[in-house]
Image 1: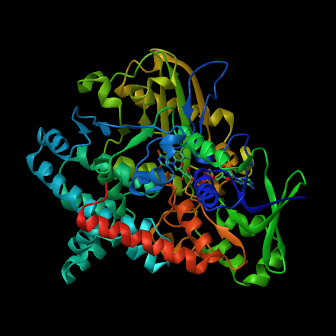
Image 2: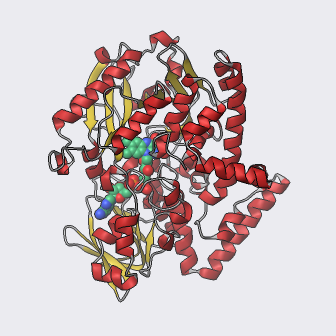
Image 3: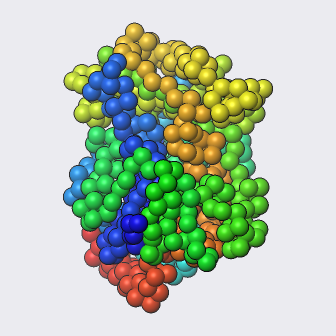
Length: 565
Ligand SMILES: Cc1cc2nc3c(=O)[nH]c(=O)nc-3n(C[C@H](O)[C@H](O)[C@H](O)COP(=O)(O)OP(=O)(O)OC[C@H]3O[C@@H](n4cnc5c(N)ncnc54)[C@H](O)[C@@H]3O)c2cc1C
């Protein structure tokens, strides 16, 4: 039986990031991936080889913001392994039914000038609002880039700018109380407090709701950072698609001797006297892990599906029930549409310029429109009578993703996993069938064509993936691409549960990473890096803590004296 120092279950981007850090620290690593390609929700695939050869599609993630809030790309020197980020500017285009449109550039000043064409007050408020949330972000970045219960790691991440941000957000009792109130309120309330114009509030609501909750939901106003980030540090996409990030990680991992085996579904984690010692695959093969097993899949799947009940109960008799009943995965996921096109969709009524399509195109007619897009999913209804959507035309920024002069369109449409009243029918009892997903996709495309009338005639081929199919591909509960919901009660040291929030579990040598751990889903690599830190600290408590402290002091001193790059 083959033995490695570390085995990682799943080769999503977080599993790969974690592997890279452990390989660099001298451990041998085996990654086992159930699909035929690594990357999880971060792949780029030529998924229509017959109808649209040469067209490459991001099957899931496309816009990268969070990864630029951490050091993963630089620390792992991913450019050396083939990664090249292309910056988006403009970052958002949202046409409004009344003929106005929100065009956000990377530059805050230019964006304000766009808003001022319609409303001077909102333009001024937008600058203030964005600067506030950028300071909140600055104050939080040190927490994102450290294990949530590792105070020293967190403190070490504060440089002078971030300390200033922190003080400006919670530097007096009233500022602190205002900040807490902002955290407790909803995106909708916050937007109404700041702005008058619907053409501005609607796209901001849509982006805030990317955290997976309607704009009216309390405790989720933090979603405001989703727009603030697009101004600074900005939004970018890997040349060649999100899969190019994965490819760079694969190049790094394999160049350091890491092994990635695809088509290898882990069926069971092997436990011996309370320690994780290896895994068994669905095909019966077994691999041994000398120092640890790390799960890139969430705690619920890991403990409830891959580990014998008696082993979990022996480690923590309450854990199974708490995972089963306390963790929340709401009913909302994505129906994904990919189009191969003859030409770029043209938004003629909105002074179309191809460059408007470099960033994300949001179809969000009003805050109420965004509200129904999410609320209906919760009730098991499909919000397709008037679809709201997030659209990207990746080929405007990166023509390498399609044959010359051709284009692709990426559409994210929120949809329920379980359709109410259709229980027990369709794929895995969700109610989703081929016919239904195509009917819904037709309505989504029809709505987009109201804005870009040339769209339908330019379609060469189309791929539609229903929520049930997406869930099956990712292996995620109810198709939750954040593994578990991103609500405040499941963030930071609550993610996924307080007792397993620091990447360690009650089973010795069994660790957690991935979107279901702090700081959560999206393309960030942070859960992978943070988990690697905890793993190394647990194996070399003194040496690693000293090294981390030295690195932190160096970077803080560097920031004070301006000697960091
Ligand atoms: C349609 C869509 C659009 C998105 N858009 C964006 C975006 O624009 N920007 C952004 O930042 N984020 C976006 N996201 C979210 C983001 O893609 C994910 O949160 C992120 O990729 C999760 O990465 P991960 O490595 O933690 O987990 P995953 O990518 O889920 O990786 C887990 C891996 O484990 C594998 N696996 C599962 N079970 C087993 C098993 N038993 N044995 C072996 N392997 C197993 C899976 O196949 C997968 O490869 C999007 C997600 C979706 C679905």
